[in-house]
Length: 377
Image 1 (cartoon, rainbow, N blue to C red):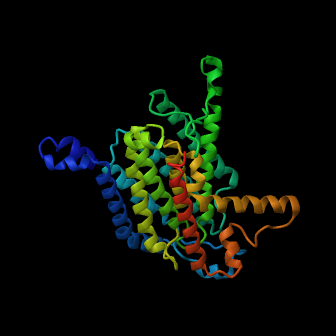
Image 2 (image 1 turned 180 degrees about the vertical axis):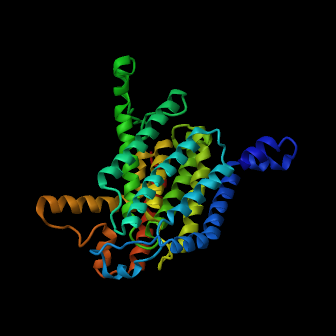
Image 3 (image 1 turned 180 degrees about the horizontal axis):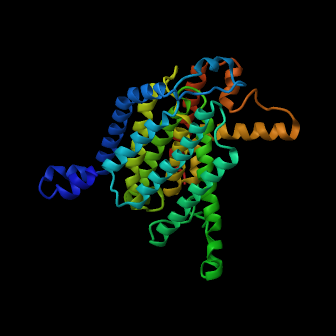
């Protein structure tokens, strides 16, 4: 909105507003705007959550130290959502379809998380939506995003080809060429693409959700992942950098740099109140929204296969749960003392703060490795 007003409308009359055409300037402003929203609105939201007794229920089988966190306000992810969406709407070019896709992912997955948190609070338990209902809703949102990407692809602004890290010339197409020109089989041509996008988005959303178990753990890792995505989005949308690094040229995705910057600022603002000992938890409304947004950005900029490195800690957390469940069902034995894996280290004797900081360090290493792959092709 401000971009439209200050640059597109007022620039012809006030030439100093030319500065608002620059993506880096608007990204910096979006990041600062998101940070200020988080810091200024945070206390008000926390007070309202306490007033309405919207508090966290702690699982009884978890580490005993966590029982003292019972009653801490939850659903703080509403603050994250507002702090991401408002700067994005203010500073980005709203005629860009990719911006609206990122907004759709944030609102859609956040809405699922809101319903899950609401049920937990109303029924005063640690279980919200059933697993089947949650997955069905996530699949629906992810499939809608995949279909919208195909619509954008039809306009020549997106590709169904994958970019493979370390291999510049290997770009497999997720659509089946032989079926594209057969009208009765046309939907099947893009079925692999839709399935892959659904897998990435649902996996990313749930991975962040599983990581959200310690004060500041998930949001700290999100700051690092969003920072890496900010760099990747900028270079993917910059023709010079994209050609130099052998990336697919996608000038229109550059506007998503503003969304990524907003996610960084909003996450830092939320961390101010979520740092140990947390004054508020993000809840599923925050973790599912952030995971969906991260996955959607990776899909749009064609870095789906790099996502496991961008969000390395999220992947490790999700894998630990899958391995634990699979091992118990097949062998009746557990691999870890408790899953997700951050609880395993707590039960080994690590303090909560030590687990959090060490996982942040691991997330930073993963993200830096992801950025190095840009030139290792």
